[in-house]
Length: 241
Image 1 (cartoon, one colour):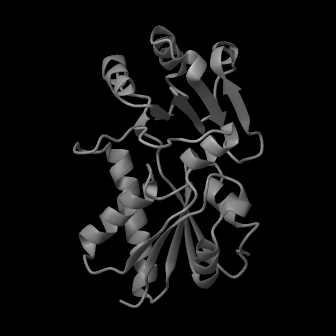
Image 2 (cartoon, one colour; image 1 turned 90 degrees about the horizontal axis):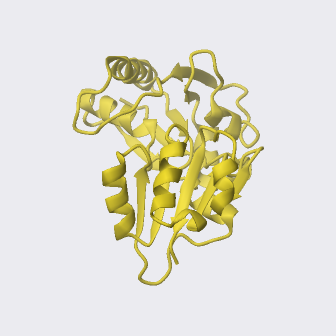
């Protein structure tokens, strides 16, 4: 099987944050398999890379991945599992033809990325498949840079967690760490702000929406209480120091 599969982190949104290695592999790969989060929507990952690498002459395969909650160790939603299966099937067709397939994904593939679920599905079928993961600039790092603050210094402890945990568990984790990065906050914003208020941490919080993208917005402290509904691409950083 001559073809290879690449999962490529393309950064949080700014095309200038696409790495040189990511751009090179995208240029060299004849097939791009690009994810989109809505049936009739556009691929954000594709929109990031097209200003950097010309898609002319590439076979660009769009694939819809349902944006549903996934709990590791539990059976995934049937619609989600079917999307992974169909993606793996389509990718393997091109790989068996000898083509390299590039899967551009937002941010860094190691952090809440659909690309790794596709990898697992592929490797379950073809264990000796040639797979390479290309790291990218994470939304976490880009958000901290946009806010003008570090994530951690010296002996400070950092945790990255989904904000969708129930409040009791979330509070326990927040109490243990110096910097807390809350991902997936858009659906639970009111609950998160209420909890941070109860813990006297609201003044230490910053919300970064659409980090490095057009329309980036930064909201800090008590201004969060009057902020409009956050964008899907939103991260809250709570730095206690």
